Image 1 (tube, protein in one colour):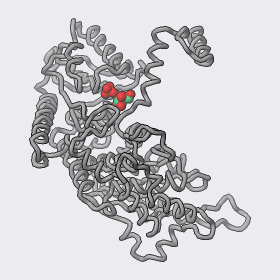
Image 2: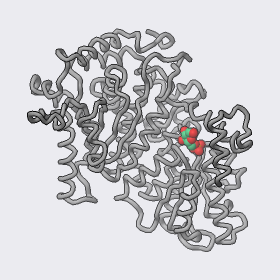
Image 3: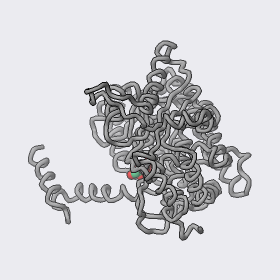
Length: 535
Ligand code: F6P
């Protein structure tokens, strides 16, 4: 099937999977996961694999050998492999924006570059990376001083979406490696309470603001930057703070940053072929390099590169991103699951679910095919989650006894230098107990139906040897590549985000014209007027 006529729902594998799904859901032929273990003593070995220091167990899924074979067939019958080659080769696979998708080039090495074009790109990436190294090292060593000559103690990253979530998550996850003197703060929301209460706690003499924005036009970011500029004017009496050592710009639009007034040598660029939600590997990651040090930042890139190589080279059935993607497709498209839960048993991965929300939902929340037609099947799931064990005391009730199918990814680190053996054992013991209880279930004692655990609830378990920068990089690249695989099979463009434009446009017209904005619906007009009256 050539790409122009590809529709996953027309493949032989998709149609066979529909039949297998109806068997899976039938009461007599249905699958019991714990039964599959009894029938096959090798199930764990067959349905688990290692990539670098990441171990994935996917044996606790509603998948038998027939289903698994058809899921692999589906990947083979889709344009996944040609699409993957096209992405890594720099073809313009983001068709609605006419752009290449090359975040993987940010973590590749010069030796990966074969053609002249790739070599030139690798040199450009290296120059940009060296700028991150130089600036982060100056700040960490204390030689980058504020306007009164004091070393920097606080960095404020002002950005939103991909210009916030990735760096914020990485700095939290890699806290073990954080610089002792320097604190990193993240301001994203246009809610003034966030920036004003942060500024209140800081000393402007030792504070540096990095304005992180791919476009350098985002409303929230520019308003927060304006407030920060005013703060420096008020507190330090600086006439033009943007032009001082207190401001840095991180952007793919250096002209806009220069016009805004940031000195050229304080602008760290990246290329427009880096999507916002894939930008933590670029200069948008400056706050990460400042916090954990450039060498650790580089380790993070190396871990991601290793995952990219695994993704490009491993056969489909031994390919971690492909496996996660196919399981997600099985649940979304054949067993009608609406969501995927991400539950890290590691408090430092607290922000992983919000990060993955943007990665997954902004990438695959689409309903138009690459050929510009409406798709007839479900695409990206609703992604949600929070850390265990906290979640156990909140929403796990529904996971065990509710009526919905909610597949889960459990994630944990085998070793944790910031914890101690007692805590860590209890933490991991809880995670294993949950995945087992969800699968095994339990019969109710006579007359006590409320104590019935149906079981047969699927989950993956992903274990990192430890939460090192390298393993963290591999983990994020794993999910990036998973999202790519799903987008390829669903035949959608995972790299644009037109869905967010309409709301932005309407906000601008409301702000310009108030409740008299043309075409304003009656409910919104009344709410606007109510706010006006009450404020
Ligand atoms: O509105 C969505 C979005 O474009 C995201 O894709 C992006 O990460 C975010 O806004 C911020 O954009 P920028 O980095 O250009 O400020």
